[in-house]
Image (cartoon, rainbow, N blue to C red; front, side):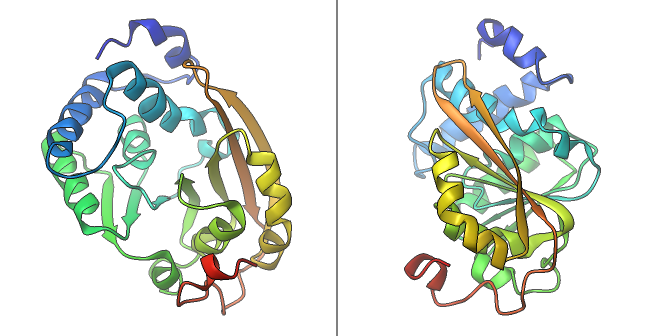
Length: 233
């Protein structure tokens, strides 16, 4: 892919980026997308902006400077988690999704690129968020395009360790969603720390909603049986 038109944007992330690995990742995605529906974004410049650069935007946050484990919940085709794992080879990154076809794709990417700092998990947030192997085990939990924030908070905050952060990657509506989710965030042990607004090179607006986990999530959350979506907090 031609990254030259985004040189200044890439330099703003402040670390060397593995562009050749990103290129191979994109190739594998397009190959798989011919038989497995993984993305509607297939044009090169749009992939650079809306998949790769968008996935890198959490690097602009101070909260990403630690060394603890990262979870991308509802990772889909690996955006943002796989991109961040490639950019941060010293961080352990876990990718979780409820659809096995996505996990199979990500496993193929891991094998093709020889990635050693990534693990994939096939599971649902409502169930895995209660499992001691995952519950409150992550310094950073990321999620992009999964659900509105009142729902997303119940999915994600149980995975965040106390003192860690949920980074909800939202569009221009981020501030409105924070207002909707205020009660849910409080119940689940979180505090809104920052809302960082970002303009992608293609013109799209993004909001990174950073929520600090200030106290443990009550044991009854996340609720099962689809309740977070049917009846948000």
